[in-house]
Structure formats: structure tokens, C-alpha cells
Amino acid sequence: MTFTIQAVIFDSDGTLLDSETLGMDLLWELARDAGLPLTRDEAHRRFRGVGIAEVGGWVMAELGRTESDQVASFVDRYHRGILRRFHEALAPMPGAVDLLEALPLPVAVATNGPREKVGLGLALTGLDRFFGDKVFSAPELGHFKPDPELFLIAARALKTPPGRCAVVEDSLPGLVAGLAAGMRVYSLHPREGLPEDLAAQLVFIDSLSDFGRKIGLLPPPTMTKH
Image 1 (cartoon, rainbow, N blue to C red):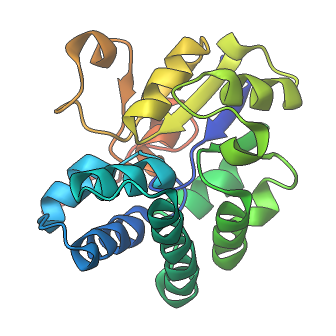
Image 2 (cartoon, one colour; image 1 turned 180 degrees about the vertical axis):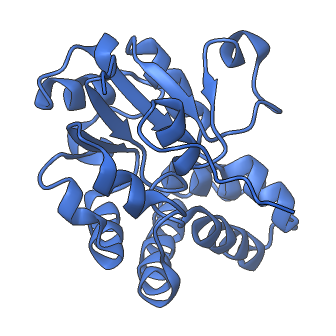
């Protein structure tokens, strides 16, 4: 099998780890507890792909609370809460293990999340064995998506030109960053809600298994006989 792609860089939350609902629900609950009357759907739409400190800042600004310690307290409550929820309910995204076991290419994780969180998530789900030290965290490196530098750092570590890297992402900042890095970007984010000029540059997938099929790695789904 011939691959034009020579390496794959994955986002973490909502891409490899089935953590996005856990995280979005926690942010919704924290915002609601602080006094902000958001619905669950509103919170998920507004907070998806946004850094926790930015979410905390927005929530406090909406409530007219400008003290920095209010934002710091929100962020601290999130980090403590999400670690508990990871231990209780975190799972790999459907198809993640099968894809990574079959993928004969170097892989990395590039995430806007803190290293402690992504490291724990990968360890709890057993996905850490696929990535070793190829996990790149924006807070640690100082480059947050949509800045493409996080992906470029990962590509250099994988010793692969950016144009030969595939990015698998589910958030708008990550999609923008992957394209800006000059990589082929596979989107778990649906076309709906994305700017059309951005959507035209993406390859849309509905699962990690679909990604495997699109790159010629996994066979098409078996047809059910009636």
C-alpha cells in the first residue's frame, strides 16, 4: 500500500478521547453555578475548541466580574473537576484503538490542553502506548491553535515535511491551524457551522474509522445482506 501521507497528527479532546462532552458539560455546570443562565446546547456551541482560561474570562465578564482571581478560581475548579470525570467515565473515541493499531505511520498528539490532562487521558484509555513522547501541549510550548506552530513543532519531531502530514481535528481553531501549517486536514467537525472558504479546503470524515478508509488503510464497511 502506498501512502502519500507520511505522518498523522491528532488533536486530543473530541478526536482521540471521548472527552468533549465531559468537558463541555462541566463548563456548562460551572458557568451555571456562577450565575450565568446558559442552556447546555448554548454552552457546547460557545465553548467548543476554546481555551479554559478564555472561557473563564468570558463567563466572568458576562457576569460583570473583572477580578483576575475569579477567572483563576473558575479555571482551577475546571481542572480539578475534569480530572475526576476522566477517572470516572473517559473512553477512547470509537475506532481510535483499531486505527492506531493498523496505522503504519508515525503519529503525534497536538493539543491546546494542558499536558497533565492529555497525559492522564491517554494513559487512562491506553492510547499513550501509541504516542510515547510525541505529545505536544500548547500551554507547555506557548503556541495555541489557531497558531500553526504547534503542528509545525510536531511535524519537526516526526521528521516529516508539513505537506506530508495529515491533521485530524474536530475544532475550528485546530482546523484553521492545520491548514495554516500547510497540512492536509481531516475534519470531524461537520461542514455546518464552518465558513465555506474554510470548508472547501477540508476533507470531512464522520469517524476515525472513516479517516482510515479515506487514506486507504481500512476496508470499506461491510454491506449487510437482507
